[in-house]
Amino acid sequence: MTGLAPFHIAFPVDDLAAARHFYGTIIGCPEGRSDADWIDFNLFGHQIVAHRVDTPRRVAGHNPVDGHAVPVPHFGVVLPPAEWQALAERLVAHGVAFVIEPHTRFPGQPGEQSAMFFLDPAGNALEFKAFADLGQLFAT
Image (tube, rainbow, N blue to C red; front, side, top):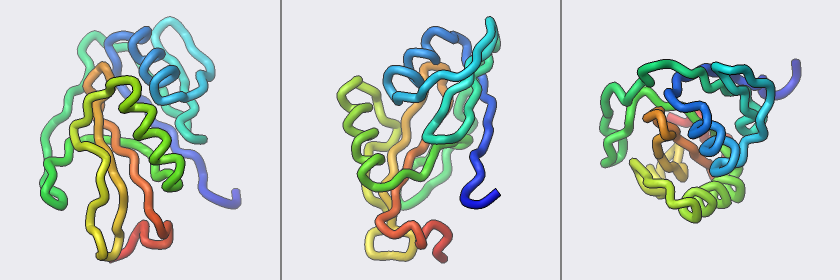
């Protein structure tokens, strides 16, 4: 396979209708296959699957990163800057509460990036980020 391979992640939710609205309507993920207890979504070319469980996973803790308490665990996607900005505006328009507001971290340093954190309705933490220079993704 050439290029970046899509990742797959399955995560717990306690309300499939809420997950369908959040991921499909608010984030804008096209829906794939589904069943009574799960839904596939296309998250910017990656396959994520919301699985219904009785008790969803909650944020286990936080780690300090550049002056912010980053929720752990979390998942998300690195987007081009224009797509990141459009997503941030879409989330604001839908009234999504941010755990960490959209901002630029590590300014002027290797790995400078725009980042934002928020929770889905089941309490799963998501991070979306963008690099002006994608070559800085793994900069030290």
